Each structure stands twice: as structure tokens, then as C-alpha cells.
Length: 493
Image (tube, rainbow, N blue to C red; front, side, top):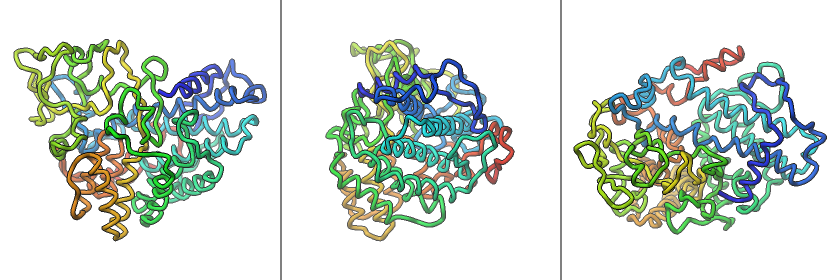
């Protein structure tokens, strides 16, 4: 984790920044908070005002890690009574989630988005914040949250101001247009500095990346494709020379990944201060506590679907992100679960399996984010990566392909494949572009968006039949419908 960001994030706790509990509850009284006029008069105080806003972004991982189970790259099977959880994970896997029974994960995502937007809006009203670069940075961060809301829920709220009135719901196209307008307006004033004191913060290239994502998915959002615009914004980042692929793919996800030259945006995490990066607890077997000398046993939950794992060639360096086969203690002793060697298998016999060592070892586990050895804490120090350059090359290659430029598409996609030590494609199809994105971006929480863009999200998968198209959008949370009478539920729910 970047040392400057660590100071910036945690200094902000002293000012007691308000986090509201819904997008319509905007008039709470806050005690023990300095007035706006009394705070923010020097760079250190401004950092303390801005720091908590990026602290809020740190919950990105926790808001999406469970929802990734709606894709074909992640599965949480039931092993005896473990992870039964009222069949929530089965419903997520099979796209039968219920807006009432499963309100919590959707409402958690919604409130996280809009609480952060409200916090940003409060700081934009702060008379101490007058620097145009800082204002552009905050507006870019606000636009990013609106982009996430639109992507996941469709017709959502544009929250440009703080008001006691229930906000209006806007169409997905209206939100798309607003996000585009905000980002384009902010671009001229955004910093071009990357890394160092600007690591983990919004800058000009992050804005271009959000715009590239926006345009890559424009046909889904508005019905009108914008492949050329996606290419143009990808070009700005790639041609800037500010970023380059990390020589080691897995270094992007290492304990000290803040120094990766590939990261465009990450959320700084820390095992004791900015906690919450706990993927090892979710995916590893209980006995893997002995593999890594962890302070507490993992929960043996998240695995990857069989066919997704089998899409990786053996020589693909990205395949090293998976834990498969015999597991060992830190001293090299083979681990034994009951009367069987603990060996992870790609095959998962059934979604719901009887208790026992066979069920407990079913499914390949993820070590894409380096497991922090000898860690007494439940959280790790890896920063979570939101945007990186490897993604951008594949995005541009896809946009070239959809625009009819096969040579340029092959150039970009084969550039990534060469780095990953697999043979180049001689031709391209939409299916192998999506598969390549899966291998490159596994468990980085872009898969749902990708599958929707390729028309595959509602298709059949392991333990899942075809689901209706309305499942491409998550339901507007029941909790929010109860709070705001102006909100309408998405069709199908």
C-alpha cells in the first residue's frame, strides 16, 4: 500500500465525515465535526477532507466479491452445511435471486454507491475546496460511482446535489449521457501525474479509462455502439507512456502491488488500517491455514467453475493464479483432510454436496491475489486493482474487431497473449475474445459486464440453465423502493 495514501486515508477519520444510510436521508445532524469554514485551509487539511472519500472506494472489493458468483468464473457450492446460507449462493449462481430474500447484497451495493456520492457532494459544497484540479478529481470520482450504478441497476438516480426531497429516477441513457458529460468536462483540469502522491486517486488517465469502459458498453447502455470512441480513449492511455505491462503477470496482485507499472486505478488496502482485502479467507480450505501460517482458518467457500478453469492452457502463465492438486503445510508436509489427501480438483460433482473431504476439496481455488504468509490478521496488504493496462489492450482489440479492423484487433490481443506465453491467434471470433478476457481478468469483477456485452450472461453454465434476459440488470433494492416512492422496479422483478 502506498505510504502517502495510507496517511491520506487515515488522517481523514479525525474530521468525522458523514456517511448517510440512504440516498434520501440527507439532513442528519453530526456532532463533534469542524465547520466547513474552519477546516481545509491548508494542503494537509484538504487531504484529510479528500482521504475518506478514497477510503470509501476501498469497499469496492467487498461490494462485488459475492456478486461475482452470478458469472461463470466463480462458484460457491454448498459443502454439507457450509455455505448453505438459505440457498442464497445457489440463487446467485442460477440467476434466480429474489428481490426480497436477496435484498442485502443489492442494497449494500446501492447504498455504498450513493453514500459515497453524498459524501463527495458534501465536499464539493465545502468553500475550502476551490482548486479546479481537486474539484475535477471529485467530480470524476462521483461520475465513476454513477457509472457503477447505471451498469448494475440500469435506471438509477443522478445525484448532483444534496436535497431533502426524494430524488428522481433517470433512464439508463440519461445517466450514460450525464456520466459522459461530467467526465469530458473534468478531463482538461485533471492531473496527469500517476503514482506517488497520486496513486489510487482519480487522474486524467483514470477518466479516460472510465470513458473507454463507458463507450465499450454503449450499445448495452443506450442501444448505440461507440467502438471508435472506445478506441480513441484507450489510445490516449496507451500512447501516454505512463503505464506498461508488469513483467510478471501476478506481480499486479502481489502483497506490494502498489509498485506495479500496469495499475491505472487501485484501492489501497492495509491488513490493520484499511482492512477488508480478505479473498484468502473466502477461497482457501480450512487446512490451508497451515500452508501460509495464517492467524485463523479460512472458510473454504469460493472456487472457480470447471470449464472456466479448463479454458487455460498449461503454458499460460496466468494459470498459476489457481490452486489445484495436492496441498501442503508450510514445512512441505502433504495436508490430509480426514482420511484423504487434500487435493483440489477442477471437478465439482454437484452444487450441493454431502459433507466430507471430497466436497471440501472440490473446485480450484484462487491465489491470483498473493496469499500473505505469516499473517495474523484476517485482511491482507494487497491493493485491489480496479483498472489496469492489460484490460485496456483487450478492450481496444475488441473494439477494433467490432469495428471491422481485424489486423489491429489481432495486434492488441496477441500482444497480451505473447506476454502470457501462449501462441498467437491467427483469426478472431467474439467467443475467443471473451474467453481471452476471462483468462486475463478472472476474479477482477469485470466478468458480468463482459458477459452481458457478449450476450452470454444469461446463457447456460455449470449447474445453471438459460435465464431470462431481465436478469442482465440487478433489481432495484427493495429497501430503496420503500424509502423512495419515485423509484420503479426493473422489469421482470
